[in-house]
Image 1 (cartoon, helix red, strand yellow):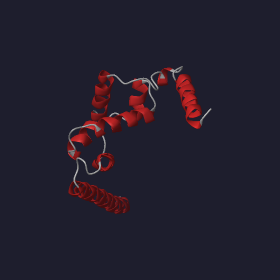
Image 2 (cartoon, helix red, strand yellow):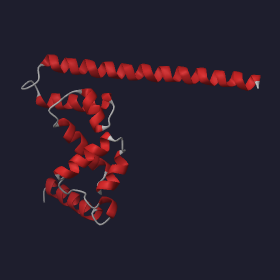
Image 3 (cartoon, rainbow, N blue to C red):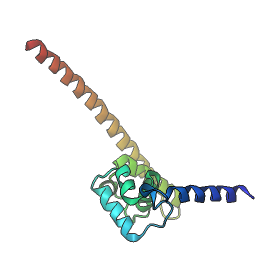
Image 4 (cartoon, rainbow, N blue to C red):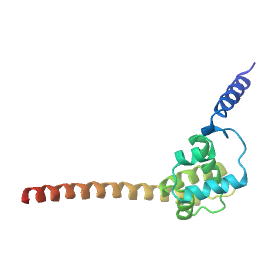
Length: 153
């Protein structure tokens, strides 16, 4: 038996075992349009993937894979909208879309568009880094003020 057949049988066996449990009863089963819409609604409400996985009877990996697939199939590449819709940071959305654009190659997306997307990702990463630095500075100032208050009292 070849390697692919063995892997396939093992994967089927694992899914069959997981389906025995209520928490993972839908592992490997097809997603209905209704379930996909519910997933998007839950993500946009800010529910975390662990909670969503429990609701759907799927694994966390199954939820994140479906979320990424749905996002990559979106006609829009508006980072702001997708970030809200799928409950992800702009950086995470940008990375998923960057992969999508790379897969599409030059057939539908120009090199300029790819460069623009990469620049957006870099800017978002820099913004995120700057925000983290400012949070650390603010935390340090807060601790200093707290010490001064304690000294006064």
